Length: 232
Image (cartoon, rainbow, N blue to C red; front, side, top):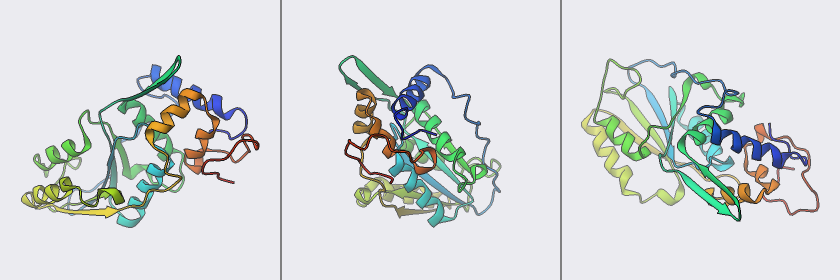
């Protein structure tokens, strides 16, 4: 857990430094493939860039999980890396790092059933992966889309008019798959990935306010600083 005490800033710095040098974080239990049946399933999909995933992303994923009540859920991480520099300090967050952070969030949350959740970094955009998967139905493979499945994806309020979702519904229908989308609110204080990367570069300990509650202790960081999205 990240501490909101004075050590919190270094906790975050060490975490991201470790992610830059490891292929996979050995402190996180690897996720097995979700335990699923292969007929008439509900599959929730949370697509996005997530560089890095923050409290708002995680709460949106939990909202999708709770509202859709799926047989299993897939979080799709976009393939594009994002970087930021301030002075001599720089940070680059790629899809592998993002996946490790998502895995940490889920594996440490007692409210989530990790046997039915998988985070994928497929090496392409989430939208591309979904279209490709809809074009490669395999009823003999429970980890592929099957005829009769229902796909339920999350979209933010700003994505209401995104034509990609309408096109995906048509592609799903051709494969006898039902496609639904649920609009989920953006939780938290509205922090962006860009601002989070800048906070990492600045060594700003208030970044801890934008991680999910269950991985952050509630000790006060510094009462003299303005609190962004305070959890007290």
